[in-house]
Amino acid sequence: NDGTVISIRQDTTQEGGIDVSGSTVSFNGFTGTHWSRFQDNSTPTILRGTVLETLDEMCDWYNLEFDITDEEGNINTKKIPHVLLDGQSDGDVITYNHKGTDYQATIVKEVDVKHMMSKVSDTTDAKNVYGVFNCYDEEQSEEGYNDFLVASVGSFVVRIKSGETIAKGDLLQSNGDGTAKVQTDDNVKSSSFAKVLSTTKIETYEDGSFIVPCSLMC
Image (cartoon, rainbow, N blue to C red; front, side):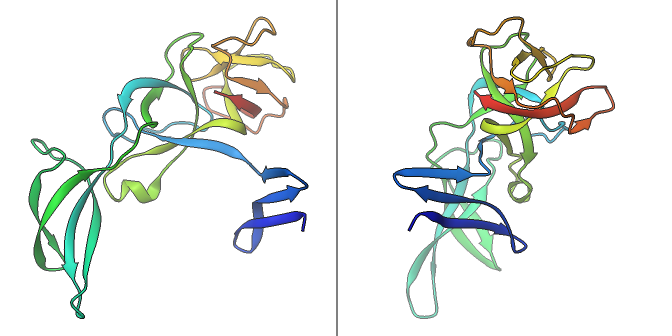
């Protein structure tokens, strides 16, 4: 029947879900995010809503793959996340100790065609805004990858430059310092990446910049 077909819950509270009404499918609580990473794989403090630009360098992920024979004689392929060391490359075979046993493991690059690295926007009116900073992936960091999520579509908060006056419906562009500024006209451009939904300041940071709810269109 129409209604909720998938409920997404955290600590028993529904945070989102997928609903059906006739032939319409609704994704509730939706913010579209993508993986990214800084070139040096670092984790500097980045304020939520900070504007990010894409780079001409793709993110890459590698696994160590090796076969393990279980007690019943079945052979299973194990995949362990691996960060390349100097001199290593895709296809290399190295010795890897797994639970006290050495295995000959092959370095295998994951297939990915759409996740690029990014940087805090430093270009005024940048045309290549990827979105805004959401959060680091804490689980990946334990594996050596300091990936983070970039909010690119749907609704999220955007960090506005200090002292900027905003109004509902304003289009936003990069200010060139990680914050956004109000576009001077209402024409959607290649540098327009968000629209102000509310002037409610969710949080004001120490430098005077602040975040407000916006719709993203990167």
